[in-house]
Image (cartoon, rainbow, N blue to C red):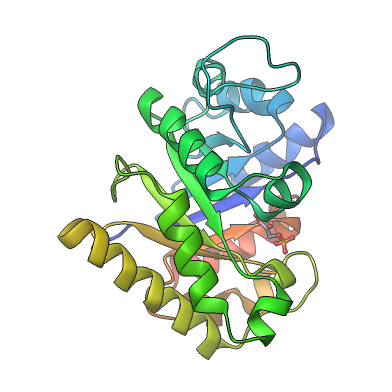
Length: 248
Ligand SMILES: O=C(CO)COP(=O)(O)O
């Protein structure tokens, strides 16, 4: 049985004052029955990890370099994330693929760096609107999944997040049938590659998840939770999504 996961991606949002959202979230969910994760900007990883030392919520990064250290100005390594108290890292988010030219091969190398230090890799994949409209969704998702997931990934150390690029921050979501189709496809591909262990990977949906649409998304087979952007910034919004997942 896969444990459900509600993960928040704060992207480039959050300064010291926003730590109070984490306090509020822990107050609202002292004993969550699903796994919880917040991935704040790197500057907040350490204070958040310190605050959550007595709470099951995990703190994660949003990217890491392939190397452990060295002359890479502005980058952060998986070792550094781990040292700051992170337990996971988001890799290959479409914003990084678009803004920083990250290819599947780069995402796979970053995932290896993360997994080797013991971080959970949350690998993001998803099609653009143009790709969906030209009927290429499963081809694109299949290729990204195969190319971004390294051989050392397994159901215990890696989470896949399906995030259609056109659904991110737009308020648009695919139909429930479209979400189901892609999640079933990802599950089948994972089982083809990893055998029985393919059943153990959590596959999250991401893109405009809100308290008002969470329950119907979580009712879909093979949706094991969500990777939430905007609605994870405020504890009260994220709480509605967590509760929907707990009740799914
Ligand atoms: O990109 C996302 C999470 O990684 C989704 O963002 P939104 O929930 O703001 O659409």
